[in-house]
Amino acid sequence: MRLRSFIENLATKSEFGNEDRILFEEFKKALRQGEIRAAEMDSEGNWSANAWVKQGILLGFRFGRMIEMSKPTETLRFFDKDTYPLRPASLEDGIRIVPGGSAIRDAAFVATGVVVMPPAYINVGAYVDEGTMVDSHALVGSCAQIGKRVHLSAAAQIGGVLEPVNATPVII
Image 1 (cartoon, rainbow, N blue to C red):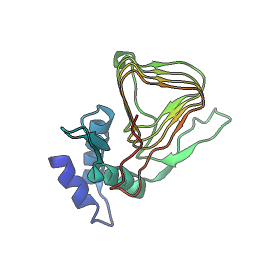
Image 2: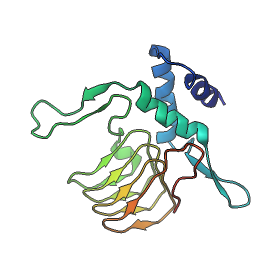
Image 3: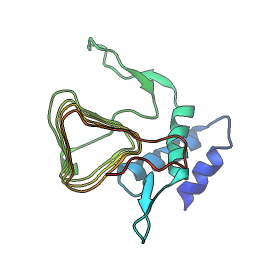
Image 4: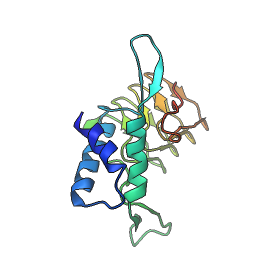
């Protein structure tokens, strides 16, 4: 797979160029669309981590630059890596994001029919499958894998496991 070899090669670099950033955007898009995942189930029902995917997520933090993400008119200010802004979403995605302070970070997969109640947070590398409700004050951590039609109860904290890269993340 082209993205896998790109990530494995990128891990050996200490300086990053524009071409690296362009390919990294492809990597994030593949995560966002659910084409690649931080963990997968094999044919026997056993889950294992995709270390190269988790390494790619970590690389995004390594070569990302700190930027201000808030708008000049906002009272609350936000500063984060330019590689992980909020996830782009549209009406066509079929995700119900109720107003009130929820955030989904880029490179998270959120399937059609997911409901996100405020305030909730879904972090980078997370996979939230269709028909799931992420209830108020719930957190889906980095690389956590949430199945179909799950109700993450209010105030649930689903820890993700980004490091070490070979560790299997939390799976529900």
